Length: 402
Ligand SMILES: Cc1ncc(COP(=O)(O)O)c(C=O)c1O
Image (cartoon, rainbow, N blue to C red; front, side, top):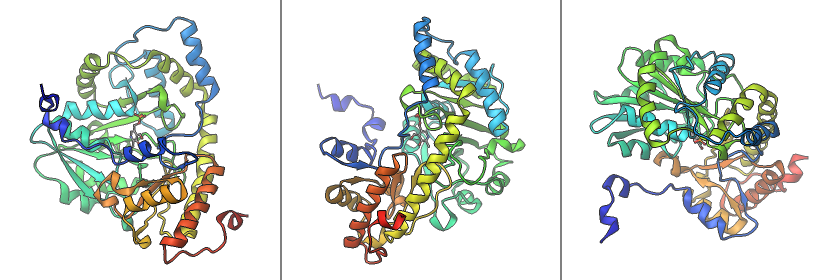
């Protein structure tokens, strides 16, 4: 039997993520400084870990209700109100999911199928397009531009909307660009969407990591509340990637439909993680603030470092990535990443892994120690002296920091 012929073409045709290759490469190498992985370098705060351990000791080793413990949904509801002024009823408007990842998948599965179009502004998180393709719907990408600070503009949105458009995925603060959309930017988008039957999937997983201004959700606009699905989670803000916990909030009719998929495909999210997450929401604001302050410090050093190496670096205002333009190196994004890894042992990932319009850029994360960042920037500066005709700095980056 030819197993490969048994596969559903939709699955067969999905390409592996453009980032994967680099993680496989560094597994075979020693002493690589990785600015590649999009996850916090911090360990989950101890009070949260302890609550997880304690829950196991107390015997919470069973299934929870399908939508998640009511106690946790209550806390999520309170948290969203106090942090972002969003109101969701914990009884029927919130599902606790296996990361934001599951939330993205089940939302799309509930909303679109063959014949529908999903608008995906790129560069963006790598899962949106494959998850859309798996439903049978068609992804319609928008190429966001650096000159617009990688924001979705009303003009670009309008050009992408057709009679078949059913969903727009909005993801700010953005992975990989670090762009944010302020209230006035969102207001222009709302003007276009308010009279249309288009649902917005607003992936707000980096909401806590907004450095210049408080996060605003498109669901804060009364005309959009009903049409928006808000996705958030614990991975980024609470350094809990391995616990696999997120949540999705929206209209009860949609949440009810999503719960059917969640119930049959997942049953419930991990019980230990749910117990730990209650503690995270109740008692970890100071830890989050500490981590955000730390990322913010590193963000400035990273932007400065890339600029000093001669690269035009957009100033990210959220998440934990920089997205510098590397065109003046004369290399493609992939060549740049390959050579930087082989010659300087620094891992960054090619911008086009996040959409074709990311060609000419690379993504580097500052969710790593300041020591690593400074070492990596020194190496990037050495690299730039060889490949970048406009390399500005002559001295090492370390000395220019002092
Ligand atoms: C924009 C965005 N959304 C969602 C996720 C998924 O996060 P998780 O499933 O860990 O909650 C990620 C992870 O990198 C992300 O960058």
